[in-house]
Length: 296
Length: 284
Image 1 (tube, helix red, strand yellow):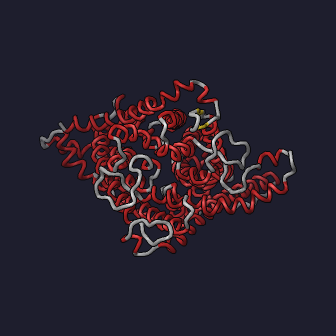
Image 2 (image 1 turned 90 degrees about the vertical axis):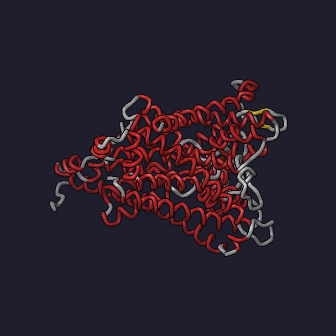
Image 3 (image 1 turned 60 degrees about the vertical axis):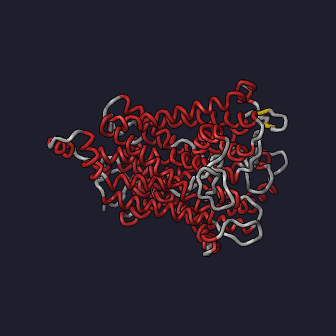
């Protein structure tokens, strides 16, 4: 009896993930079958005429996720290496603890900070001066064009980066701690400097795991909803510059689903969910395969 | 200490020095950014804290009020969600660690559990909408609770499995040598030995769901009044914060900051308690 209860709980897990996928497919099917392949390539999103294309949110999702990864990755690596290699042991534990706790702060808090503090500051001190000084028609001008309210692709990426930073730093640190001490000691014994030890011993030893962690961070950035919804500006269509408002798959769903009255509108949002599911599932799957099943 | 003598050695030392300073710099940047966020949260949140926060319901814009309905709703939904997550999570984790150990099926379950662990929470909201809201024609606290359970379960599964795997086989053999069946040994010996670790999993799961907004947006929806009946739409702290923060009314924005502070404190307390317990149990 007990054994059956345990096995069915495990099966329930499998069934729920399958159910998640099936429900998205069923829910999104009307939109997908109506618009076909152009659902993925068109950037028209018009609830009034009931025409939907997902290219805007898809590009917004990918751009913000990759930008945030580019910002967060060097910082996270730096933090992890500092804690493992350079930091006095007395400081290392409290900082590591703080980083781990920050990884648990709900994303809505980061989103609010972005909306009330970072976006106005950014608009005032970075975006406006840049727009003033950029010459018309130059590449800089086209890069920074947009409504100067601070709610844009770039600020959303920064907030995302701040959000995934503690998480990535914490996992990187754990990863670096798995390097056997005698390998590092051997490198130092050969006369390597700390930098050479990191480059020649630490990083090669955990290379696969590192890529896995990067993918996990990417997965988080791709699926993050609230922090982005607060600050990305929620404009449909392709983002035309780095400082233009945009939208992501998750933020579009969060904003519109409760108010979607038309059946096709709801279905199109479900289809967005399906696209998001496919992207994150692929990323997470690759991450898990690279990190490997440590408990097997 | 051997002094760097040749130019080459000196250059290597210099590169290393620059690198360590860069690492320190990265840490400083991150610590400052995160400290700024916490500072804003604490000052703005504390400024809006008042006893009325816990005794009054959400106000109309411009009048005085609190967040009682949201706090009550959050507590009820988290409680129901955690009950579901603990039952399913502990059983499934036990299966992974005891009955399924080493089997193909176990590694499949583990993989999907890991995917669920980091699946975007808004997708869970969509799924529960299709599963519970659309068929029953209405948003409800139950739907919100199930969505939250969905997010907490993988964490409970994982910690339960980890902690049970750490229990020595001698414990199992001793129980069985006394004539107890496997199931009996698990319930009376292993679960007891692993108790603190399982509670840790529960606390970490609670920390995860208490700040979740996205899955509640279209499952529990929200309510302006204290609602003790989970079959009705229910307010929750995160969705109320979301609504208030994006509003144009300063009163509402102040309440949103107070709510955000409450959530952050709750999450921190749950996380710290979980870690302390986890350190005291048999974790290496």
